[in-house]
Length: 279
Image 1 (cartoon, rainbow, N blue to C red):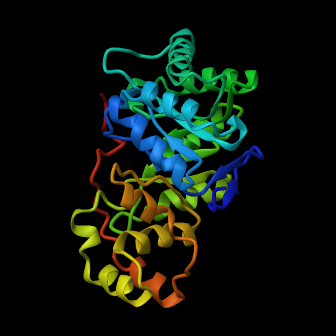
Image 2: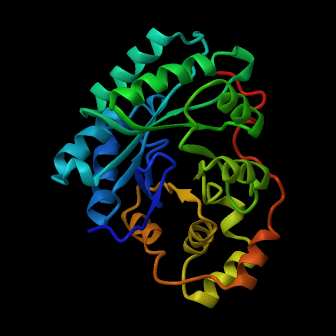
Image 3: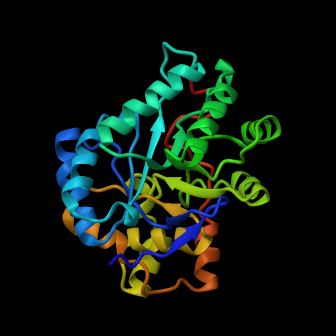
């Protein structure tokens, strides 16, 4: 059984607070990586149409033998550079993701990027509302939406997003977005929660805390997310790291250590700026 606690989304659906991300995992490797994650105790798997690994992910889910109701599967609608979305094209794309995953429903379906310059995310969202109403997505949400995008979406449609998945790590702590989410009851989900490794995990503050708690730097950062209330989806194809990343529920960071980590915020993005990204 999974030891990961769940949070309750704004529509009453339970979502594991820690999941397994499959970004940059090729489709032919996703079967093995997702299978290892499920064996380790992960029950939430995060993929996307653009990742190109929905089929491998779906095969691993099917092969696991885990009852469907114990799994939480997220995928995302990619915002194609060649397309301004219509209702019908969104519904077709959802059907395609569902088919590739081999599932009857998705637990969480996200708009991958707002692309405000295309002015189609309200059209997309209204199609998402239809999908949710049909029961084929248990929850719907967004990814990479800025507070102004959320305010418009909430003001002009009828369903508040359950989740906003954003880049979030100690070097980019997203206080404005997290405050907006709290106002509207939206769960904050962090992509690149470990800052893609690199400089972040070598930081002296994080290294010192890892030594203090007898944990790895990655475990310290993931625990920081958990105590902030973020949902996290670390990705790895290394079995030892897959195991390590879920082993963060047997210690608590002290208040002064949370403050030390809060001081690392430098507003540094690793990914694109959602205000200008259009692909």
